[in-house]
Length: 528
Length: 106
Image (cartoon, rainbow over all chains, first blue to last red; front, side, top):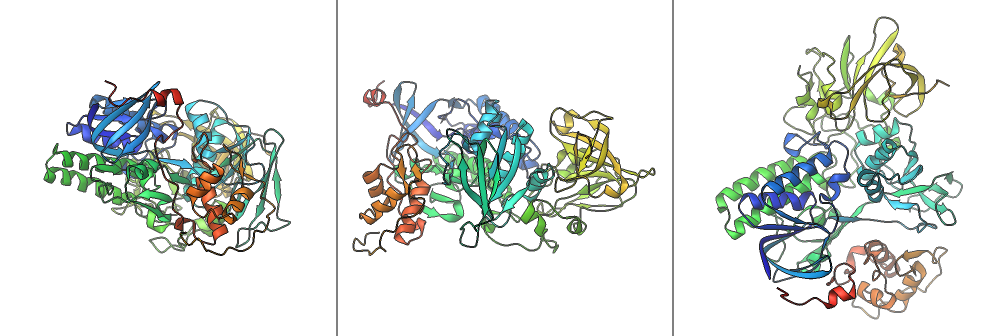
């Protein structure tokens, strides 16, 4: 029987990160993954990640995946694809199906990093072709280059629903509406805002009544729900769509831990049935670890750190690193993990109603209800100033752990400070040179450069633009406000693309100056 | 759920009882609700009785849905129900491959 120091099930962010740390200590590591491609969810994530430098913030998910794979390969980690772990036994024997045979392998330590599966909801017509998980839509678009449909309704306003809605539009689909049974948007406000300003209406407190169609989806009816989640008669709305995307949460795929005999718990805070683990990710069976979504649903960024911690802990266990050195490395990772688990969306904050930011600014209620900050709310946030000439306008209104904008500005116009969840503030003493680095660096696409008065009755707004084909200088079209409504005509004054912007182009549009603080998106079409 | 004498409210048909919950085995919501009234109080029993979660996807789609339906029928919180046992093979596997499985083939 083959033996390894560490056997890892799942080559996603947690599994690969653990493999890297263990291999760095000299361990012989194998990673099995049932998919044809490694990387787990990372390779579907075409957006820029949040966090700070140590969390690989402002790097796109698939690039992080490429980095991890390259690092693992350099360290001699064996990654076996198309291999299905079908059994895990308490004495750390793993059975894995590879091609047409079952292999038995034994590990001195084991890491379960199998991730999560998508939740579903039932409604009449939910088994029709065209009803798919948001993750499935991402797989089709971002891994296989296949458009899931033409007109889509998204159910779910968590980060998955918001991010995938945006990606669907980037791929060329029309997102006709975003619905969620919850009364408030669940994901980051900045993700919601970038979807809303493209013109997608948000229907909170709405659920799907039924999907129409005979052999595939041809339409969907949603309706408003009351406090008991029952649809209020007369509130139904119908949309012609060919695709219904469900982004209603994830469940840990923890069955391997269960069958190995690890002590399990059903923990709503972790989104389901998970192994009980200690601070190093070790389960109740010594030497069997769990990391990433399988031990509690979180972001890929935290999965990577949990993986690293488990990898180091396994190395300590087998004596590949001294306890003192290992603990020191783990402490560094724990500090990074704590940095991520801060702010309004921290794991402990789930379901809590927040009315004020850490700075004491009232949260935008419109953002929570409709996906965008209302005109009469935006002025109270510290990122909004009205200097003369070009200056950044930072529409970042919730405390999330993210700070690339602060480092991006060569002139230090943007201040967040040590506490990475603080709202970015504009330092008006420093002069903005209009380089746009902040606009491109903001993972939430929430930073704009505005010249409120160009002296000729117009204002110029530079916005992050990630759609193709790119408009060209001189193109005429309409400016959309935060809600995605056409507010005025606009002309493209400049389009900048640079390697440093990493595929976020900076589009500068000229609008009448009274729209300087309203116009936030450009659409190339004739004004109505 | 070990209280076998648990008294349930009478079975009342619901308008969406014919909705399919387990897609692989085509089990409806009504069948699951009826099974509870037939005395299947645990998820393992439901699985053996109806084959929910025993098909191609091995319960990846319906496990949580079935749990919710059974919990509501019993009047308990979903997390009070113990999940059905996990055992090898974790994923569907062809019998000819499983049959060739010899311990220590090398």
